[in-house]
Length: 334
Image (cartoon, rainbow, N blue to C red; front, top):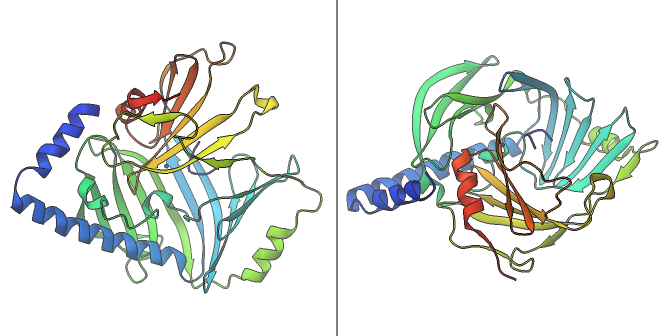
């Protein structure tokens, strides 16, 4: 569950103590919130405007993946093509929130609806006014990336429930051209960047649309996700994990190929930057044999745990302790 395809009680107490320190701190927090949101809005708008092409590289845990990007925006319409240069050959086309991924070797195309967030989704989810409560914006010295002058900022977490970010944005447009995810001690966990970039490139929306709609010779599959709510599925959090709000809940019908006989629920959360998903399904002793956390060497962690007759898998680009906080608070209502 990679990008391709972004403590516990003690940290929560730390947040409460920080908020309670007095008017001067509250005023500084309000100013930080404004600056964080103004910066995020500029980044978000830059990702939606103009046309560009480039080579995009992601490195994490000693592994690396790269892709060629074509992006164009006309009015309210956005189109993007992402062609993998490493790993399994695939081409992904995005038109607003419609996404089709072609796998030429198997002649399968996956067509789905997905929120349109661009290349750096963790930075482009919203201008949630609460982001400044959990991250502090710190300007850094400018830099030069892929031949472009860049402004550099660091988003420093105010608690230990989330990672930090160091972000390079092209000085004139605000387009993000490099992003590092930093662990709780400030070390780089993961990096995504353009190794080469052409702004105002001659990208044709019409041509990309034709390529996206050309599915002849492919078996087109539509993932059968059904929108629902955690309450309707009989689940709740006893108390929220500080800063994280529910972003959506989906039910995935059984998949015989995966060995599942019952639905799986996916409940997604975000603090405006980081995301966490809880996957809940009926416990199956044949498949569910290992409880505990997994570190993939980058920013993404998973945590699996049995809750009575249920199996929970928590996934997110957050510290393992944050996933544990989610699982600890999850309860069955019916």
